[in-house]
Length: 157
Length: 151
Image (cartoon, rainbow over all chains, first blue to last red):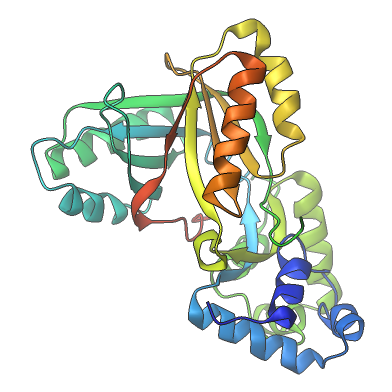
């Protein structure tokens, strides 16, 4: 990837929280001796390159009203997993969809995270996804307890 | 949620989907909403306090900065989960850790600077807790969360 030490310094400073203030990049700019404008240009560049997926807020699902969340893992033996993945990705309630390398003991490689406001809504969503993809062998793996949820900090070791 | 008014909801939408990349992003948001900068700042601070907003910053693509991510799972006896959770809290590379309703009852994500680091951390955890951890790295990504609708 095409980023230098200055970009790394910027990532280190903005990867958790930026100050919620009039000029959030001011202190950072002073610290690494470049202008705020250059920081903004570099952030734009990193967004274009995909290093930064986006800037902005990360919410807590639960507190934002999405109280019923489930990981659903789907078996994809019989049909084209790619097609199913694309269909699943099209649901706005599906936040994450991955095809994963899985061991034989867990033959459910297509993973989705699904968010709903009620149990009924969740069940209906899963039914709809099953019908639209033709995948009827799946596991609904709900979380019972959140032990840790933090943001990754890069370049800090 | 009920404590949020329409401006709060529009603000959350902008913060997630149209965050301005500018030297003064919060002023730009204030202008868009037709409220003052201090009102925007106050609303964000209060939503952070309420726990609706976890953070405001950059969302980085781990793979684009050379990091390797994987989902991991294992079957763990109930009585050691607390100890395991404490150990995981000290490992910055593990960002998510859940007890789940399945025979594989522990699920966590591991994002490391290299595959070697991943192997080392997995081995250490397996040895310390007498468990077998399965790693399920993504081979293809179809979607990663964009935002939560606030409607």
